Length: 201
Image (cartoon, rainbow, N blue to C red; front, side, top):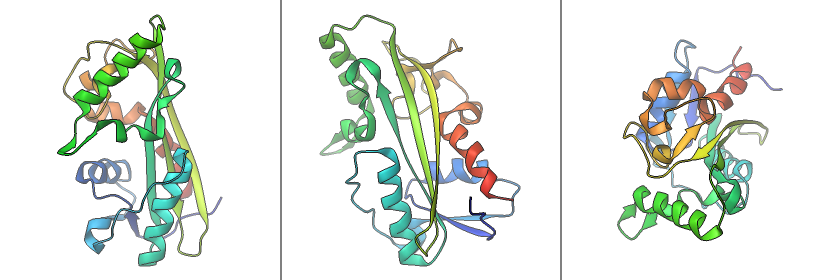
């Protein structure tokens, strides 16, 4: 595994919340994180059918454009009874002409589960794949996964996206009911970061 030895890391996102979460996970390592917005970079089209494929697209596009080592992630909700949908299309299920509507997306998950005839518990997993890419084309890939179940109606307003309808195994709270920073420690992104940090020595 290639080791990252720089002091500046580009995060392939325009999402301020995601940038803040990643900065917190890297806190204390003396690494300055920058976002794509600082370089006015466009979001590349995510045309792959896997989390790793889409994360690679984002990481390599930004690394090539800036000459900086870049970290990208792709993540989503995989519901077993729906053939692991929405999966890589997790964000797409929330798209509307006026922006993303996750209440609508969560309702769609529930509706499709009802139509599938599958009986609860509706097992699911949140998956996060991180890709750390260098300008020379090399990359390292890390995956984190949290298993759980879909609950309906959703509970909590502490998270984002589909968090209110996902209850991780071993917990009575949904992601939407958990403190944001506590959730980050055991979330799919947190678990992927545990593996990533082996690159930062």
